[in-house]
Image 1 (cartoon, one colour):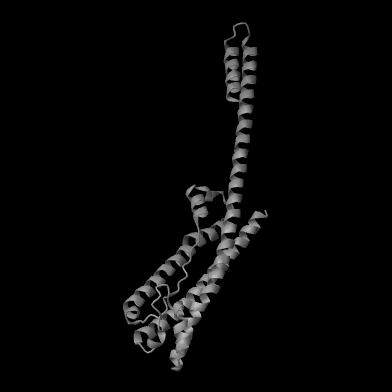
Image 2 (tube, helix red, strand yellow):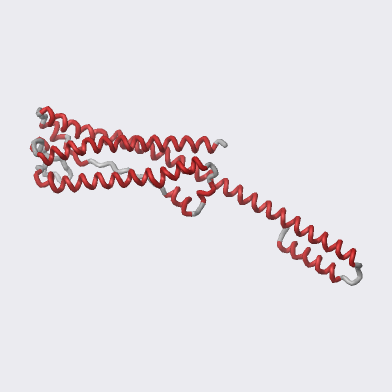
Length: 246
């Protein structure tokens, strides 16, 4: 019932009580009839309003989960692709390490592939959809508390930790290189786009040896961590898919 109709019935109820031509018994009966009409109409209106709100909220939650699933699937695929691409750089570190351990060097291999020495692969993941939903207070719409808890851990702990770890490790590596290796390095060519250096001249340098031994392990560990993250993202995506079937 519209607000205008409610006002009309309220006015009619008051007019009934003020009608001097009717007895009190009839006035009271007609008054309560009008009140009942108002109460019933308002109750129905509230029920319909709440039903529409609930339906809207369910649609918001469903659209959010569908979007998050797409983000997770895309993010996991990007991680696996990047890990595959970066493995060449990790392998190069281990190649130098093995040659240093055996004291048998292949200068052509070391020098021609030295562009891998400072390659980086930062983890980037767009969390805009999650943050917008969270800041709007809509996370309360996710009824599956186990799913919500897992999602919160991934987005507020796991992913930020991986991003921070990348910044710290690559930042430390860059700082060490600039301080202890860069000043001793000789470029392969005068081409400003060619960042390769003659690694074969550095393999017996203690600072360079420490650099290779330390970061070969660190980079391999980062590869493992990223694959673990991709697995966690895919598992959450699978949980969301099950939730969307309900």
